[in-house]
Image (cartoon, rainbow, N blue to C red):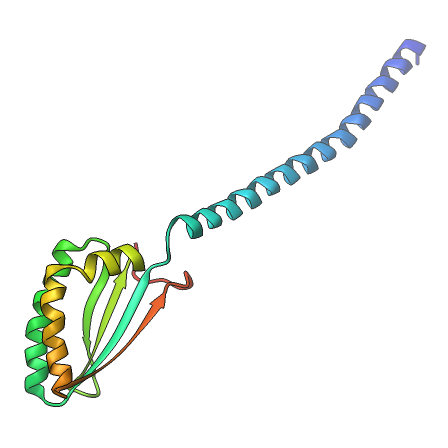
Length: 164
């Protein structure tokens, strides 16, 4: 083999060898950069989601009536309030009355709001419909016709409600 062919072949082999060592380094660098971008994006979106939007706020209120007539009276008043909430409070996510399948005098009200401060405290609790409804319920409670037990909760962002 002539000398110039041997030199040319040697150069080609060196270039191929360099490519083999450079390419894995570049691939590794790209993988590290891509991994860093994914981590930053995930962390920042989780931070934004938690810091920009408050967790939703829920109330679960159990009512136990002494007699069916008091429950029926309550249902009439509650249905007016629920209709108002549905039509006028878009930041209320859910407002539903559930009837027990084991005790006909027990109901559960499920209330869910986008947030506590605005949707629940400012909008819902100051609405005309709620301000008319609440005193009627209080009279029933003070007369001993109903016992009320309620608890509030903040969304943990684990699990789901509904499907989009």
